[in-house]
Image (tube, rainbow, N blue to C red):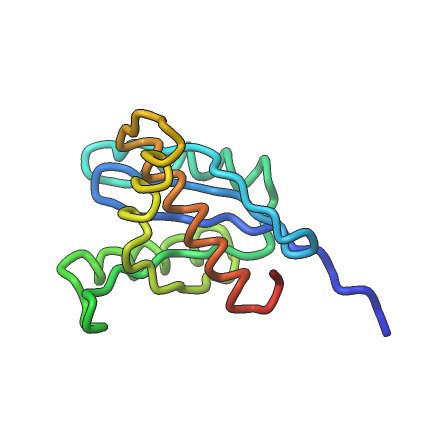
Length: 142
């Protein structure tokens, strides 16, 4: 049986002001918060995203899909879907979606438990890591 191919993943926690980004790997199941990019004139920092795509050369992009607790779409859900389609089109990479309910809340709680003062940028990149972790768990990689 052939060895499973290691895939590099970039995970995104999209927000209108900031986008948290994390990197992960399927073979080891490791996930690392990378950075938080700030929107420029209410648009994603495409130069920053392009630099990360070039640096990490991901096989797959994972994007958190914001939903209400009852599973219905939030106001921002359509913007997130549009961002996902833009990622797919610009970089010719597949995008997969993960239900991201409570990821920012969980990220804030983790930082608090570690005794770290949490700022929005730390929360956003950790939320992206939690989104990636969730995807890996769903794939049975952890």
